[in-house]
Image (spheres, rainbow, N blue to C red):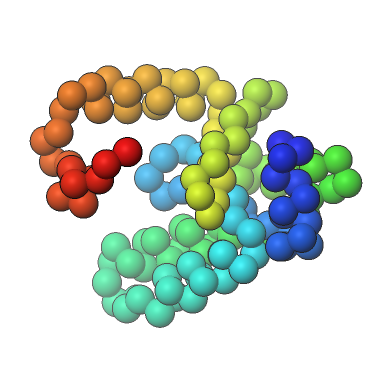
Length: 135
């Protein structure tokens, strides 16, 4: 965990984080406990007879794992989650507001390049909310 986030994680989550898989990309999602509890509550409340919902519940909630940050800001990622995201020696932690994404460095670079090429002037399929957003 980068040093600039460690104190906040210690204060807000007492160093306890939740790690789970991203169901669309080969990366992991890292949440502070309070943020994860809200997501888990919402996902669990969805109708489980819907196949897509049940798939998300099984994957997202089923892979959720408590991880503790040590005094040096390190996290021990369980083998099954490391394997899912192909985590090796070099990883990338990407801030996403209320969560982080944890990527294999080469996978991140490839997807980042792909997304940048897709976004290069292509507004087709862009949600109206984003088209009206001024950055």
